[in-house]
Picture (tube, rainbow, N blue to C red):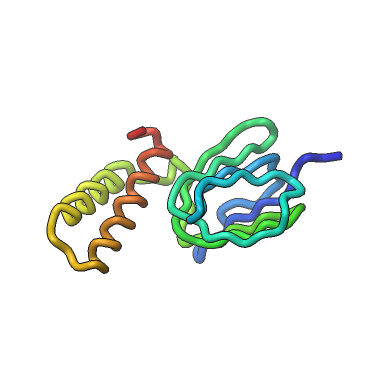
Amino acid sequence: MSSEFELEIITPERKFFSGQVEMVILKTTEGEIGILKGHMPMVAAVAVGPIRIKKEGEWIEAVLTEGFMEVKPDKTVILTDTAEWPNEIDINRAKAAMERAEERLQRQLGRIEYMRSQAALARALARLRVTREIK
């Protein structure tokens, strides 16, 4: 019996990933979760962070932003705003975004601007972690 299940990751621009995998680990708004074949059905909100995919015994990593995930025993579908492989990330742009967000967070901001700056910082840090630019 195969221990693989179907994974689809879809963004508004493209089908980012589609294939059979052994395991997926990603961040949700409730914390990190691992998905294996036969996982109980569920829906979860996806948080900004890395996704690790085990395919053919090897781990591959990407970064996701906010979205939703539907898990079924034989298929998981992730709908996300953006998904990027490490080689698609512009490291200089991510570093600049991180610096801008950190500068904005140093100022006294309204609640909404503070939340936007925190989100921008989280996205930049996730991109840099996946590219191994920061730990």
